[in-house]
Length: 116
Image (cartoon, rainbow, N blue to C red; front, top):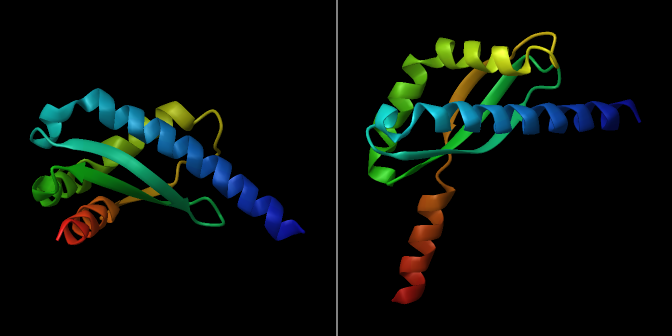
């Protein structure tokens, strides 16, 4: 029973981090990411809430590498901004790592195959 409560908390925290990080990235604007559209597609958080894996999708996908570089370089700043937003709800702001969500590329690939 205890494990279920924990995972509910994880889901709530992950949802909150996803919402806030999406807002932080949106406020930076497309110019900060070389004209690419960046969206937070999901967040997975460790059971102890200390590490958050943030999945981002990038459009157009050929700018993904550059965007990921910008996110990695600004990791500390982004975590600080996240801390300002969720600091009241969370005791510790989780360490954040960014991962590229390639599901959009996968969908595009499937669509291309279906057209053939």
